Length: 253
Image 1 (cartoon, helix red, strand yellow):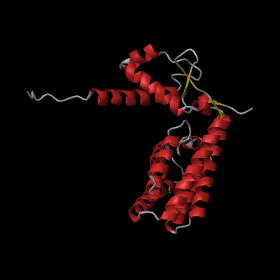
Image 2: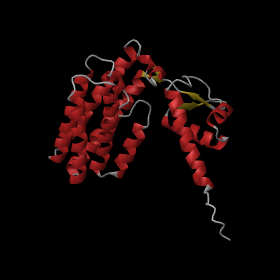
Image 3: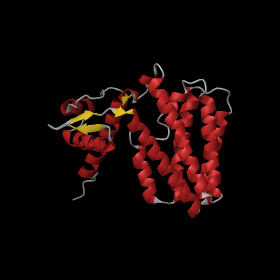
Image 4: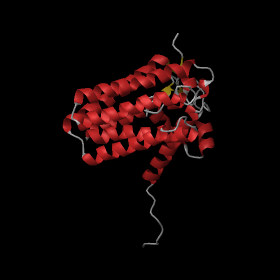
């Protein structure tokens, strides 16, 4: 008999709890609430997040796959720390994959509607950069638009395989396109650095539209160098170790 009550898919509900737990745990780690090297107390997380142990365990396993946690020999997990070289390699890998995305987009031919979306996104960034100086709101808006443009590279390529790989890379600690943009907000050259990055955005879009694969790939490889510079500043400039996640990075000797 149909009572009119909603049917709850327990598997779906459990999956949703796992995803929410995963997102919250990632935030806690990057914010320093769970410091580097700290062992994860599963029961404490159950109480803090208000969910059962099953989604907590699923979230912990997922964060280990992402690289934020490491499995301990006697069971359980601990928050990982990262060498500066490891983070640098992750950024380099992202630049390589984004370069491949751009080359494929150029060589296969990108959909005009997506090219239009890319142009509109960059025009909005141009509007932000017209100001002589950028405030916190402007930087936040830049981060959103910057991540949108980088996501559009996947759509431009038309490759589901490469797009999934890019999404996987972007979930790695410190490898997302805007991971170190906040560092620039504390730099006197902040706006100038964003202007350089924005010019590269326009150049790669132009290369894709002109079907110039080698040029498109080279631009995106060079684009990742800005993130490499910001990484070096993040681990060296006084006070920047308060940036989310930076305290997990071990400075290169």
